[in-house]
Length: 422
Ligand code: ATP
Ligand code: MG
Image (cartoon, rainbow, N blue to C red; front, side, top):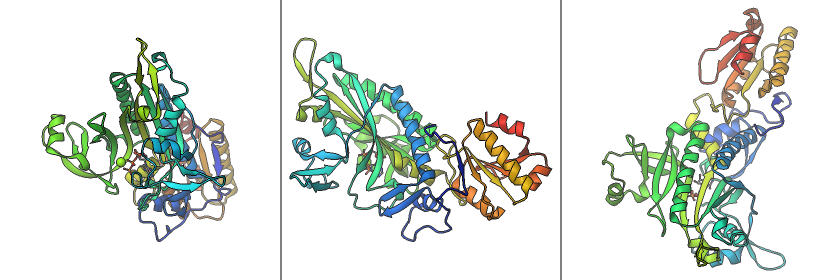
């Protein structure tokens, strides 16, 4: 867990749950996340991450980081401010070519833009470090705020004008070496989506490629709220984006014509860049025979904040959010019901004991709030386990434990609870 603190008192938490979402929010993710106090809307497409929301975002980030490290990715962090000159060299500065830049000027003169992605500056960096074939292959990645002047920002945190992306870039000697790594990333992405709880809804999807490969690949999560249309081949477990869904493509993939149309959310995207950027920006290496060759590149994105919105879209119910355990802001939501001294005391004891064991707990210790409201808040916040301390539970010999995904709970002793959360 990326947090140094694994406890929180709800009475001290500055955010409060709300009955209503802002009237201008149309998406389910924004509605539930704002009502739960996970995020705050600043403007269309621009959100703050409040304490509970930041914990979720960081948990997702940590899972992505683990999987990127596992395939050898080296983490770095690049600036948002971009040098216009580099982007002119790849023909991606002009508004005619790229229409979603936020551009501005330096007081001292000259133009800059807020990074939409980072191929250009990173290729430039690597041209100072890569010399020989011995320096290749490798890959680097970052978690960085991207800025995009999106025309429509109506899908809550799924389409931000400012959003958190994980972008990985690979540098290989040639296409074969590139493909080997590309396949590893595919697998790492599958691991990520299953670990964060949306693997069963997420499909590798063929999308349009570029000069260097016929296809790129997207990872699309089925959801009626998605902006994309895909054609899913259920038996093969792969899909094709509507943008490239032609008889030719179907033939290329060599599978039967048995597709179903779905709406889906693009949660990730992997792309063969080839030598487009290395040639334009002078990133080359000396090969074994003393010749020179351009570096063969790939780029691999995941919308970290979009993933958080996606989880809410696809896993919530009519009472609120359902966080999968690996990304939940806390593992246990402890509720003390009634202001009786022995209840309060027992709840506090349990809180300390759980924290002591290293279990993340949000403790609803609020004294002026009734049981109904506490239950409703717990459902809205979506923490995986609800543990209730009440006069009744104590009379029954312990604490009532209920999973967010289940209707009924059971009263367990302290020992049993510790066993459960071991
Ligand atoms: P889209 O087709 O949704 O506009 P894109 O193809 O432009 O996205 P990339 O440039 O490949 O996306 O970015 C990598 C990932 O970042 C995407 O797969 C998506 O998950 C996420 N992403 C892209 N744009 C946004 C945005 N405006 N807000 C939040 N996440 C985004
Ligand atoms: Mg796309």
